[in-house]
Length: 121
Image (tube, rainbow, N blue to C red; front, side, top):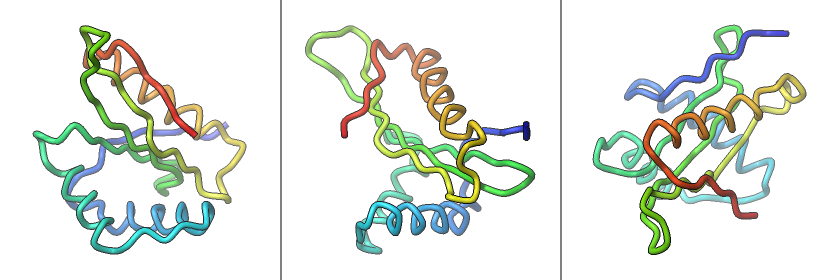
């Protein structure tokens, strides 16, 4: 089994993230305007924003991404973590990348004191 590294993005990763994001859009047959993509990238880069993304890297190649958003809840002391987007490149399916990205979100949510992680379809 290949080694999967989950990394937080940095300011130099836009082109890498964009390539996966465009593949995500083709797979899900959606067209997200460029302005929204740039706005979202800016949010990921701002320390005060509760939005995060991580990349799965296998053999030096970005092969998947995950987006998560933290928010308060009226019914819980800790924030909730919404796992918004999960994508693994078609060439990398079946190698545990999706699982590794989900486990990363759960670990980060625990580290941040979130009381819940959830996904909506």
